[in-house]
Image (cartoon, rainbow, N blue to C red; front, side, top):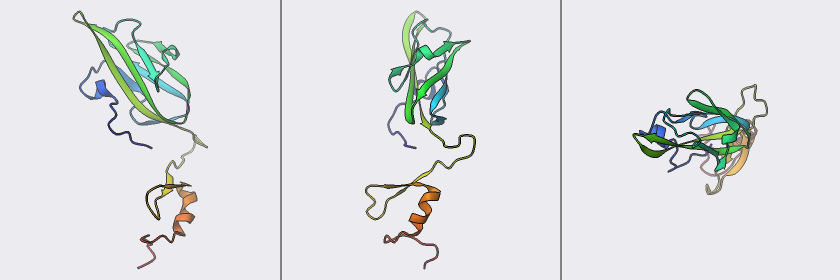
Length: 161
């Protein structure tokens, strides 16, 4: 999984923002099956009706969600494989002052061959011999014979001195 550096995610809820607004689902860095993703957003009691906006990768998805008791939730369909950013913003009126609350969460959608069974999700990349551009070798099991046969210099072998 790719780690995002210097990305402001979970800004309001995580950095001392308003705990009454933000994502319950998905959680930060969650792995989800591609296709449908369950979404649940906490909505504050002082929210201005009709101002909630929810987007996945800058595409509005609010129509797929339904309001409940203090939350808006539902399934987002058609989520492709890869990393995604789910963002939400809402207008509130506190003490006669309108303001905007924002929250965002990143998650990764994956495809599994056998989702009802435990699968190894680690892909192996070779950084030898020059360590500049990784060469994808597949999953750990399929890469083992290639790695074991490697003759690149400075490769540690437990069976060698």
